[in-house]
Length: 115
Length: 112
Image 1 (tube, one colour):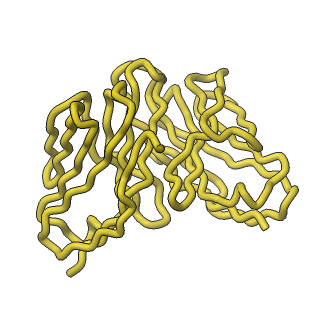
Image 2: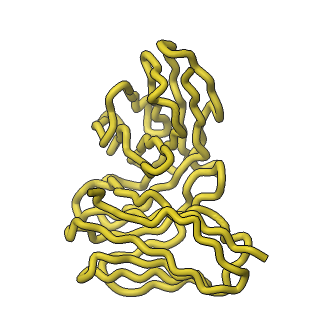
């Protein structure tokens, strides 16, 4: 049981390049999330998917797009990378989008450097 | 003003000390409170989960919620060098989906 996996672990991009960050979970969770973590800013929600087939914006969605490919996979795309998108990106999942269980389980992160 | 405030530290303590980590928040509608531990260059992992007010204990860890003061705490007894990490508080609303609002984290170092 791998939990939440993310690829790649580390990536360097030039300004204007595009890339897709991949996330998969094997816990049969309904909800998935993308965060970025920056020094002094904590974890900020970029996009989330409450269930397969739905996606919604979080706190900092500008410059990003997402795709909930199926129940297991949730990808984050940067269409034209900017230095301000240099960050550590975490994917997370939770059993459901409502109810008493608010627990989220995190992946190991992708470190992105945009030059 | 951020919804959740957390002292970034770093906090350095000797092995065996009792550690107190705290967060304050402004939104009185938060009902679910969590503590995550994050080791360097790793993802956050859930440590403690509490609903509404009160205390919850798990081994050397105790989570405390005081909703009247909008203040939550995590106590670590008999701290070990392996407890050295960043501790993030997180909270959620009832009915707010599963969106979490995080503090910025407190860096803890337990020294031999």
